[in-house]
Length: 420
Ligand code: ASP
Image 1 (cartoon, helix red, strand yellow):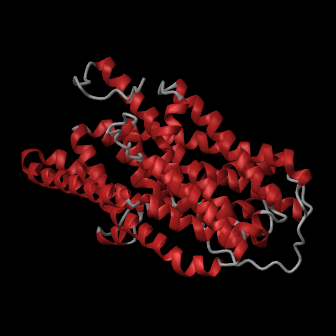
Image 2: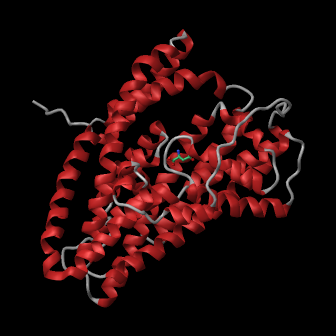
Image 3: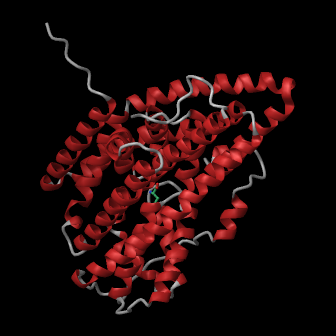
């Protein structure tokens, strides 16, 4: 008898997503959206809660064990600057794509009335605040609040401390390594629930937002999605193929579970555990994945930057303002900085949009024009955000492997990051 092949987690998530969208549409047509919100969404929230609960211990223990295994503080610096360089350049490019395509499309946008708009902009954090906020003033609060950058700093410092303590730090290091192993198992249990989580997250979103997608913002949404796809197809494909020597198809296929998770949860942090698992299957070493990805989930937001560029052009059009080249250059800079300060949780990119609009003197109330469909923008931008993190991890992994191979320090059996 032929044994039935077990579906991979990617296939399961894909089916859950497709069925979830179909069920969401049925609920929308039948007018059962409040049922979806009241009884299906909570299960999605339970799933996200489980992810969020494990993500801090995972980041903390993975980065610390990563640093311990590198045995060299300078190596962290080498990975760090490569990661930051990739994140900055790709994000600036993302805004540029957003601005160019939105300007090409803007003639087709429906001009919405701006009189009587009411939007209370939350105080967006400026760049200096973000910088200060990287450094924790105590050890508990960052973990309790899941302040990812601070958690990363704590993990790095403890990793360095363990290396510097030498023999005396060994026991503490072993404890962290063992804790990391346990956290990974817990994470795998949670990840096994992803198909159910994805289904429960997507059904209410489709049921609630369906009618708006077809409304007057359809073309603005379409512009953003075209840019998301262009950015992934041009920037990620070329850098992954050119530097990491991985075929783009292999890359996107391997990362697809995390992409689908990001799409349905609209949270980079929510997709982080799955992303760590996906890139490790692509050959990225754990110490690199566990440093590059959490950092990316916090500061690397290419999709958000695209959205901010597109949104600025649309809002300007509604106010009858033509953006000058200087204003667009300002948008590239402010959106790059704003996306760094954007937290990897649903809706935060819209809050940071206020900073971009203020930077070029556009009315912040304009955000109210697109706030109703933010979730739809968010699903796409989050997918791009985490794909950029994954692309960076395979590239940094490759560059580090080349460097080590040159120095003859790659130990036999260690992955070089090549999958072909
Ligand atoms: N939801 C996005 C993320 O988690 C951030 C944003 O709102 O743009 O990556």
